[in-house]
Amino acid sequence: MAGQQPSEVFRIIERDMYKILLEILEEKRVLGTVPGLEEKKGKDYLLAQLQKIATQEEFLAKMKYEPHKYGDVLFLTGVGKVYPFMRSHKMLDTMQQAFSDIPIVMFYPGEFNGQSLNLFDKFHDGNYYRAFNLL
Figure 1 (tube, one colour):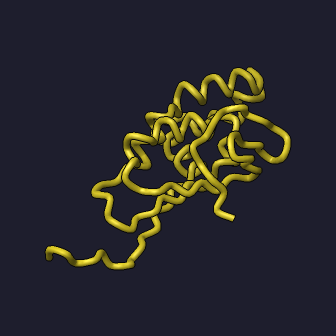
Figure 2 (cartoon, one colour; figure 1 turned 90 degrees about the horizontal axis):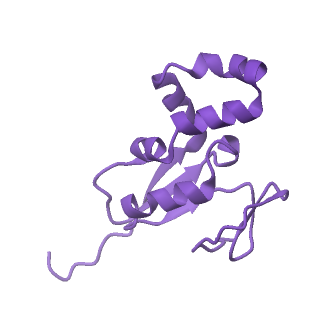
């Protein structure tokens, strides 16, 4: 109806980055090989292989849904669990087009200083984010 105000109904859509990583690895049939690969080849090799398999595009494909509705809010969880396999700034950049019409709330295990993220109060990423703290 013309002139009708949208209802104040919000829909929370959660996307857990860790669960998505496990789904991708399972679909690619490599999940069971991950522990042995780290033991045999080391952490750096494992990191490189996982980043080739579980790309930002793969994550985005698992996160997408249509149609977005007025009042949708995307909750991005499990960010700390996928570090360093997936970096939050890369994922947020990838998500911009697909989720430009709804807000994204990223649950981040660290601090945001108004410009960059500080993961676990140890890792300073130095990347700029167009974001703000909710609290």
